[in-house]
Length: 145
Image 1: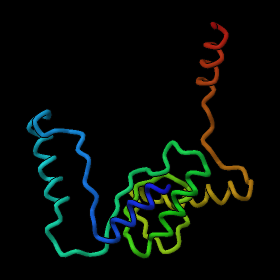
Image 2: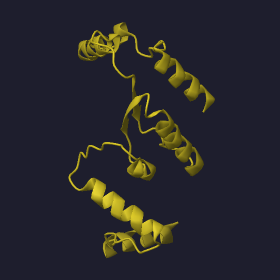
Image 3: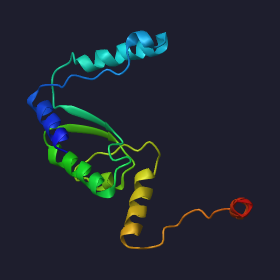
Image 4: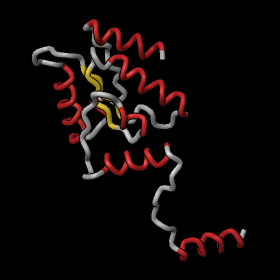
């Protein structure tokens, strides 16, 4: 986490870290080359400077639970000085105080919050039943082994 802390500190101070380019414009077709040019124009930042913004795409994906908690603590710790735009399916992201959420599927937040509440209260979560045909097919495969 120290590397992330240092990076966010630099962003807050106004020194934007140099982006590491993993794709060279010459190695892609014209469609992707055009997309790279558009992305570069956005990243140059020609508009009025405001609060630093950090984009995070599934920052807690593939992390164990303690590491996920640390990610969200870090986001909360810097939330007053940095605007975070996060794409996430993490349960920890559901209860960040003062966060604004955008649902891509209507009712997703309500369903997720209900499921989280059920987990916390050790209630049974209502799930779709597994079709009998699927269970029979899986048992048949196991017998063949």
